[in-house]
Image (tube, rainbow, N blue to C red; front, side, top):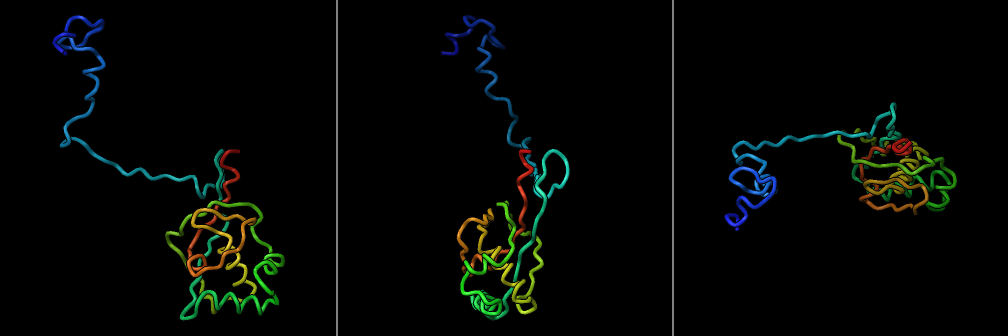
Length: 160
C-alpha cells in the first residue's frame, strides 16, 4: 500500500511517504529514553493568585487505649451527650477544606490533651475523609478516622 501511495500524495515526505506516516515515530529507541519525576503543589501557598493556605494539622496517638474510649471520656468530661451535642458547643473550621495525609506528622498524645482540646481534634477528624473536610457532613468516629494524620488546606483561594 505504501508503494502505491509513493509519489501520489501531495506534500509527500522522504521517499514519497505521506507526512502523517513518517511523523508517527517521533521518539528515539528505548536506550535513549529517560524519565523524570515532576512534583509540584499549590497546597500551602498563602500568597499570589493561587492561594491554598494550610489551616490545621491534625494527628493524635492514643497509647494502649482505643481512640473511641478516649472520645467517650472527652464527651463525658465536657458534659456532652453525643457528637451532635459536642458539635453544637465546639467552634470548628466553618468552611470545607482540602485534606492531605501529613507526610511528617507530629502526633499529640491523647493523654496530654485537655478534654476540650481532645474533643475538638476528634470532631475535626470525624468530619474528614482522607481528602476532604466538610463541616456539614455527619461526624463519623471510627478507629480509622481518628487515627489519620492530616493537613487541612483552605481551597477557597484556588479559583479566586
